[in-house]
Each structure stands twice: as structure tokens, then as C-alpha cells.
Length: 175
Ligand SMILES: [Cu+2]
Image (cartoon, rainbow, N blue to C red):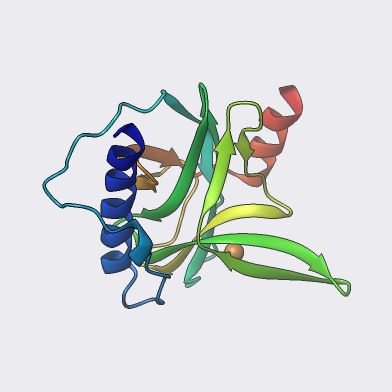
């Protein structure tokens, strides 16, 4: 019984995510997870900390910006499956890797974080959130309203400060 109920919440989130992303791409549907819509029991997930969230300033006219944060579930796993803000048309989850001496960004469908392995996003490589279609430039001192969507967890709403690169590096070095 327990596993069936868990499956239910996973499916509803998959479906909602599919709706949100319909314009951007077509995520895989999971027909083998089909369950009854009336089964709405959701087990309470372990607390999830979102820390060190910040975005970097963008030059005037830039249409994209990068946002970074750290996700730390107190136990088990938390899987980030999407994010949104009124300040951008879409937010994509990206991974930046050095390939053939070139930095290349790859779009991801999900980003997992574990209690023993937090998801840490930092500038200069690796995972980050890409704000695409900015409605305004990101200026140091402003705060971006951000919604984070997770697999089988409620959304998290936070405000993310825009910080100068030097300030970010100074606080990272101090940790
Ligand atoms: Cu990117």
C-alpha cells in the first residue's frame, strides 16, 4: 500500500511538470506509474534547506542570467525538477562542462540532492539555473522571486538576491 501511495504523488507531479514544460520541450511521460487520481495521500518529506542562493548581475540588454543555490535535504533525496520566476520567460536547469576545450551547457530534466551529498551550484562550471528571456536586467541588490519545483515535494518560494561576483567569491572563500 505504502509504495502505491508514494507512486501517486510522483505521478501527479510528473503530470503537472509536463503541462508547465509543454512549450519548451516534451518530457517523458510515465504510463507505468498510472494510479487513481483520488488517491491523494502524500507522505510528508524530510525538511529541505535552500541556502546560499544568489544570481549574478547581467549587462544591460542581456536576455539570460545565471542563478545558483545549494539544496540540502535533512535526510533522503530531494529532486529539483523545475523553477520559475516572473522575471524570466523560462528557467532551465543546466550543467556546464568543459568539452574539447570549450565550455558547453547541457539542459537537464532534474537535479538530485541527497542528505549526504548536497547539490551545490557555484559559478564557473557544473549545475546552475539559467534564466532565459529576462524581463529586466539583474542588478546587484535586487531580489528575484523564485519558485522551485520538486519531485514528490511541495514547491518552495524564495527571494534570491543579485550579488556582485566579487561579493560572491569573498563570501564563498570565507566559508
Ligand atoms: Cu546555463
